[in-house]
Amino acid sequence: MFSMNYTISALDEYFMAHYSDYVRLAALPGYQMPETLVIDRDGAVSKKDSAVMRLACQQDREALLAALKEEQGDTDYTFSFRFLTFSEKLRRPFEKYSFAKVLPKILSRHKLTAEEAGERLNIEPRFWKKLVKGTLYPEKNTVLALAVVCGLTAIDTENLFNACGYEFDDKSVRDIVVRFLLEQKIFARDLVMQCLAEYKIASLPIK
Image 1: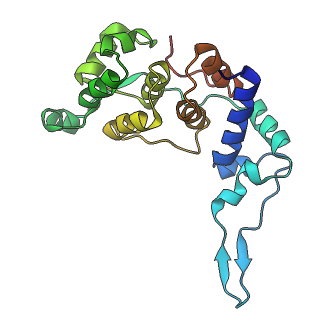
Image 2: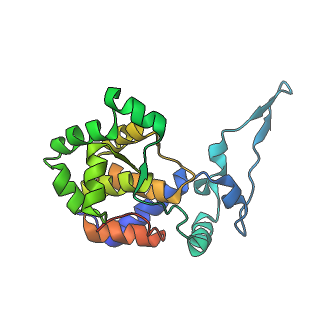
Image 3: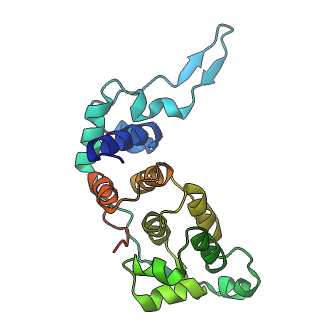
């Protein structure tokens, strides 16, 4: 069983190692821009991997992380669903790996039905039914919330992402926090909500 303090500490370490919005990081007061170019003995110039710019490589990383958290605001808000485009409507009958077709298989592995999953989300039942049928497509926030409340694996979530045209983004605070929860199998509601609150993530439609 994870304790609250341990979970937040582990999340912070994970976040500092993965977050890659370098424009935002470089703007933090006290951030030290690392040398990214290296001159080899033969005079050739090479470039270091951009990972050297992440918070985990900074000497004052805890203070920088605290500053980032202080100014953090959830900018990833979207509606829970979107309407299909005309071309998507035409392709829909022939799609083998749409969200509506992939979702039941994934939920069944976790001994859940689509109805049970929908009851855990803050989405109107009439819209959830349309998402399950494939007449609407879920926004990324919905897939992330679904993964957390249903205890899905990161691979399950990536499969749902592939069906919707999404992917985890290391420039997104929200994506990194949710991926941490999935990889560490942290699904207890109090721990999940505390982790989301720690990084001021309020846009996931979790009931």
